[in-house]
Length: 315
Image 1: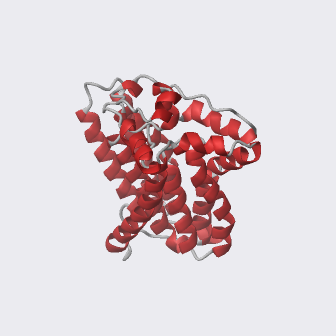
Image 2: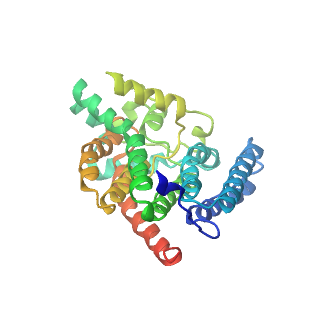
Image 3: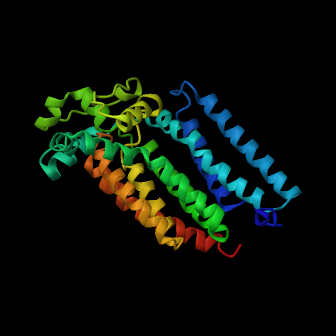
């Protein structure tokens, strides 16, 4: 622990702080664009003021007592602030027409069915239902575990991986805000399962701006109940394309691999596989969302790693 209180003089803002400022600036512009339509624009601005104020306080503390512990706190705080940013994506997305009919049609065209409907019927057993829901639920713990390992055991690389992790999340959030897609468990509730299975996918327009009813999914055990509770309590009809669960799960696994800890990587692999499959099984995503989540994660990882190398590595 004494290593975390070694003097660590880092001048200026960290890469994660600069990244957060860019995201705040971008979403503040969106608030200005949608100001007349948004009923909570002032609250969103207050959130940004609170985040900026916290960043200033932590920066001042680090200048007063420069040490590794405070440097890490400055990065970890910004990762925790992701919990503020995600719910806001719905406030921006609901200002635009939803595109679920496009992605439902893509699944139908590519696969001749709706995989999110067929999959759960083909594999109805309680064992697999619980296994897939466990994988989906473990998403949060996978990310927490890998990033905690990076901060505690790979301090010299921690800023790079925090930058990649945070930047990837922000890229997904921007897509969610500009390309609203609710996902099967909202869209199929709206059009009905019969229409979904017959290949009829009408545009939904702004329906999800005021409606967030979920399709009924049978709860078969502890993990399916936990996932259902999360969906009811914390989810909004937004963020289906691309799947950030698959995307950030993949980014997390790539970070685990590049930290050269193969034990950590292979221990997480079964949960990662279950997570990817679960996104379709529980009707959270269209299959094209999941595939694009995988591809986008690889792209985002390479992009954010390249930006960090070009702009921040010499620090």
